[in-house]
Image (cartoon, rainbow, N blue to C red; front, side, top):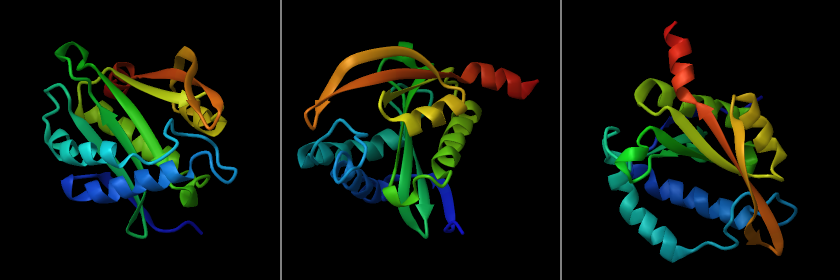
Length: 189
């Protein structure tokens, strides 16, 4: 039986739990038979320190402004076990797009919780923002994630060969998009 779980927006008080999750994921990716799912081979505390310093303000940035960032947490037994993020670019001319990221702790993968987290994030974007497009990037070899994104309506629009070189492997990155404007129009019919 699945563990009790909830999904909710993350706030400034959740930043340390978010950073702890990110550190666990970087330390797992590409090790002990794990799939490579992040371009980072090692945890970068300097980069993490910068993120800790700027993230609370970005989480408070109004959706009508550029540069906003929103995080959503998947909690299993009150522990952050997954997260999704939406971030708007810094330019006013790109406020109609947001980039999505998602990551799950290995203990909750394969239980359908990634789909639930993605659906929550997409529904939030459609209902709470004026974002017309959600972009995401996924490693070509990550077939479970690609299957999830395909099933949620994302379409591949680009492919960058040899985008990253990590663990002595050349990683091809795929660019996928979801048409939120169409979903919004369909939901109002």
